[in-house]
Image 1 (cartoon, one colour):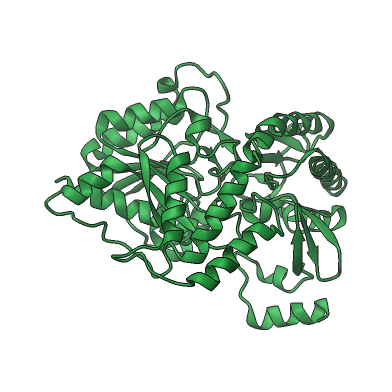
Image 2 (spheres, rainbow, N blue to C red):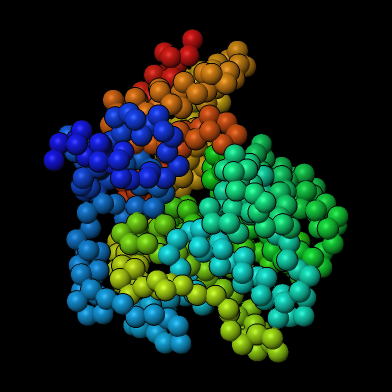
Length: 453
């Protein structure tokens, strides 16, 4: 079928996610196949997938071994639930995750997406505190500009006003502490930094005995790949321990190798109480998310007078196909030492992006780690001039989409708090693919500068 026919049918029948109507009316791409780090569209053009789908295709496209694992599971057992029963695919996946997770986090509750994982974590921390005789602990602190999902509970914890205002009123009792923008490396004692003191101020104002949890990403996606300063995560851990608050590490993007480690603790050096995950667990080959729960917390919930069960579930949670895919994907990632590839090449990506910053007046900052980066853009760094509102719209809605098409390098323009270019290649990308990626970024920045004089 011709591309235009596919677009016409999509416009008529398909509601695209987070997609503006003017984009739907344009010549949006139709992808029909994938191989390694590349996608092929319906016109036969190859594109380097510099965003790994949506921060998820960690092992690259077209893996026959992962497809075979799904096919074998389809033939053996296509469906069984985890409600009062279990099946080998979910058991295998949960056991493998336990081997790789930080010490003490040995139990996984499976769902179907990152938003559902965060939703499940919210429900767990609330029920846990209630079961421990502290029902007043319902409030949650997250960070300014943080994205934690789109379901209503997760959206309440998300701190992005532009995607919340259409759906209010949302769950009360969520608060935004300062994020770590502007804090890099050694900034002195972390407990003296405003990005930590902001948590303390909320806790003091609201009352420590009303706070259920702190939610934070190892590297914050919203506002552009924010890496916390030295000592920050230990300061959060200490604060939670002091006040009986649970620390939830939202690793929907960051887990399963995105930062060069299985989980955020390998990057931050701090073990949380719960970990939410999704995207990289299956490399996007099947929908799966989950919450890894500190085993002693689950045991306390089960053993409490009002506990006995985590009162939550979903028909597809821990689906046999998705969990079989997860085991195949994670096993391949381990056996092929993909995390070593990220640790070896990540510093080179950062160095190259820093070099591009020095060459392009349109680059305000470069942030990130592993295979997860943000290039924050402005009109003219040397003149200290940010984009006007209209220039930012031109860059995001015209220059970047046209540049992705012309360079054959797919990235993401992001307008959350700044005009950002997000970079997140498949974890299997090697020097050749990274060269193509970085050359594409160079050309994209040149195109921005040609458009914004």
